[in-house]
Structures are given as C-alpha cells and as structure tokens.
Image 1 (cartoon, one colour):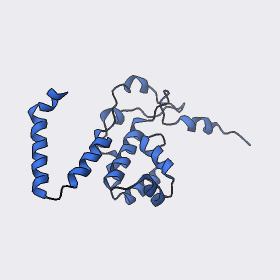
Image 2: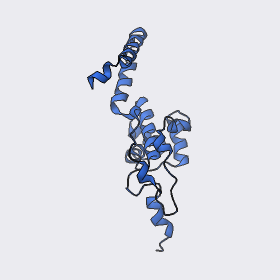
Image 3: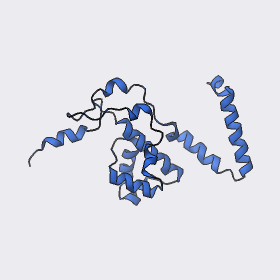
Image 4: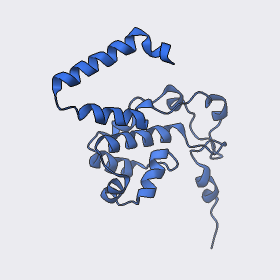
Length: 162
C-alpha cells in the first residue's frame, strides 16, 4: 500500500487547527436541519432519500462532515429548496472565514473565530415554536398571536425579563 501526500492534508482540509468544524459547514448543516425539521422529516428518512445513514445526516447537520456539491444538490431537491437556501442568513464571521492555506489549515482563523454563534433559526426551541404556531388552525388567532409577539418584542419587555 502506497501512502499519498494528499491523505494527510485531506484529513484536516477545511478545519481550523483547533479541530472545530468550519463555520460555513456548521451553517450549511444547520440550514439542512432547519429545513428537514420544518418539513417534519426524520434524519433517517432524509438519509434514505439521498442514500445515506442517519448518522451521516447527523454529521452533516453538525458541520462535522463537509457536504459536497452533488450532495448539496441532492439535498436541495429532497428538501424542496434552492441550493442558495443553505447559504442564506450566513453570519458575517462564517462568510469571512479565510480560505484554507497550502498546509490544509485555515490561516489566521484562530484570531477571528471568537464571536461565532449558531443560527438561532436552527435551535430546537425556535423549531418547536414555529411548528406549534402553524398548528393553530384559526388564521385570525394565529395573526393575533403573531401581532402580540411582535408587540412584546418591540416593547422592551423581553429585555426586562432577562
């Protein structure tokens, strides 16, 4: 068996030297999870639809594994969204992450990674709230709840509770 120089590089390509997932991979994965859960689809069902195990879907959703272009295209078809959906609302910190250097690391990443926070739209609490909201059958009740939520958020009452 002959070792190739690319093997060592490939293992760390796209990962900062800290071993943490690339922020872009985390964001794309969180968008996959967001859409899957909004559709009420399990990781297992999504995996079956694209020929993967649910464990692989989990790794994609956490950003632990990078999603290739063809797989992203498959995901966009199964989840019924354009490919651009996975990059929407990307935090500035993720978009500004430097391109991998020749050594397979991300030059200068450590100085910039401090303030990255996951997309709040990918939180379980948000997803449960959206699902519960759309289970309200009466459109007028749903609209009144929406208006109430906006009013509370704009009044500053939310900040006082924290």
